[in-house]
Amino acid sequence: MKKMNVIVIFDKKLERTLMCKRTKEPYMGMYNLVGGKIEKENEGLNEAYRELEEETNIRKEDVELIHFMNLTYVKWNKELEVYYGILKNEVELVEEVNELEWVSVNDNFFDMNKYAGEGNIGHIIEEIKIDIKDN
Image (cartoon, rainbow, N blue to C red; front, side, top):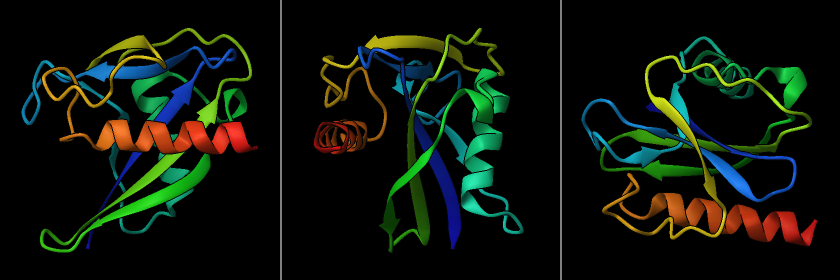
């Protein structure tokens, strides 16, 4: 099974979440979550931290990631691991490929003209917001 991850990062005040703007297909020009492929020989959480640092310059000491959910696409033999974290301090973002942008947590993440993932980003962020509120 092909494994990938996405990482939802919130600022310290829980007012914004970090998005990248896709530079290639699929979803070119749309906002997406940070993440990537999980190498077969590596464990998921370590891969999430690796991807996060590569794509944003956010390091393990800047945020504690929580493995929140997995989405399995049986037909396509693909699994998506979802992580989230709240920044502990301000970080200077460094873009790897995709432009990075902070977006209000109150934005409509279900807007499929703006956000990639056919509504999945909206679902993921809303579920995480419930978890944060409950904890």
